[in-house]
Image (cartoon, rainbow, N blue to C red):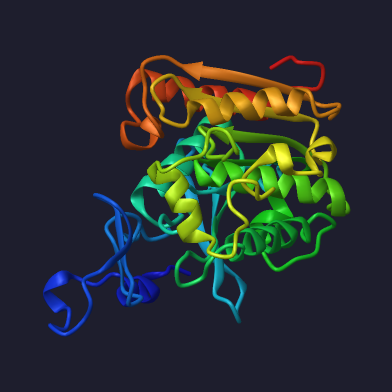
Length: 331
């Protein structure tokens, strides 16, 4: 399933606007996004759609789109590596894209290519979640959709569930979560919720937070990332909201995985948020293993927009190594 129809409704060109409509802007993050106070939305990123395809070649990958909840339109794109044998079990990754909770898509070229590259590098099954976006669907809907999608993936663990690729190839004793930017905050929330509610039949091994967006009472301010949070979640209490401020999250010490990897970039405006998450998690009493890796000289989500550079390839290899690490630390 793609959100082509949805995008055609939300992506409006200025030339088609009625002359009588308001031009007052509610939120913008140019050159990617603009929302008006009358409810109109312009998205300039994440609305393109790469069609799913079956590629049996050993060096490639195959994709399919699945509907998780028909009533809400919750969908996902599933990836498997080429050359996989019938019944072969490999780790499964659930991926949550970034975009401030108001833009981005598993089906757009940027995220399709990134997840596909990770699938090929790590040889894993991946489920890239198409959670609903603000402002049409304000947070916490993105978090709610993300949890429903994770439960749907886990429902295949004992040979049940509707998706054959997951039943046949996913090793549910090696489940991982990953996400970038605001998707990193979703990963934290899903891991925390799994620690409290559980995922029966599944072993959630690790969580990968790539240049994650978090807020803090002291560090939050008027930057675009913080304005994006207030825009995406109008009912929030602010920057002390535990969904976006882990220091206020009572679930932090109960994370439902055994390993966490945090990737930050030296020149990222929100680099300090990732460092703070690392320190806060270390001091929380959580008994898992947390590591942090910094890419020198790069900005926020550089790997998405320059995926062929040496540092982006190194980041991809770090993610793959984290997923494929054997118990005891060996690769």
